[in-house]
Length: 201
Image 1 (spheres, rainbow, N blue to C red):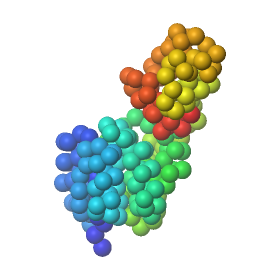
Image 2 (tube, one colour):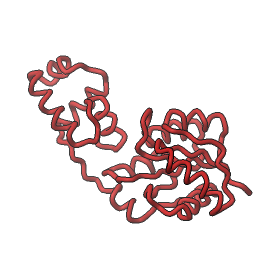
Image 3 (cartoon, rainbow, N blue to C red):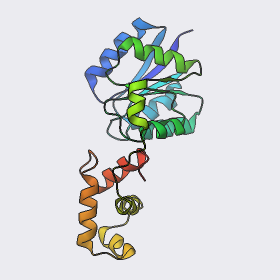
Image 4 (tube, rainbow, N blue to C red):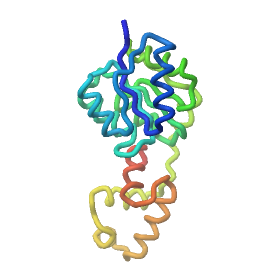
């Protein structure tokens, strides 16, 4: 029985290559392709495939957020997540959401196809090396940085945060600047979201 797949990756060349190669490795049909997490969710809702393959690093909702929305709509969907740089807590967060496949983005297409087939039948496929890196509990944020990111995520301004935690606005900015540098993002809101999706908050 053919396994239907929605494939989401913001890199066109990788997405195009996988859409061509995966059907050659197993009985797989790529029914739609998405360039970001928001589009992946929309295409999942439209096509209801057996499996969704998500790149973790995408604009407009990273893979972990797309997985949360997709599995919230249909917990039985098989979700395979690809990651180039496993970060602390990512696998634990993914598994808690119901993601059943987790492997490196540079995996051979035959391996990705194997993961797709495994999760389509209700199983799991976790790459040992990638999982070991992503499962670590190491959290780079200090307790204060975690607190300020939580408040940022709740929509408070720097002035509001400073008043709530009894620090000067300049001190809050310094803490936030330090915390942002521990993520790949450039703004405090993006960095706070990054931290939340990785289980750091």
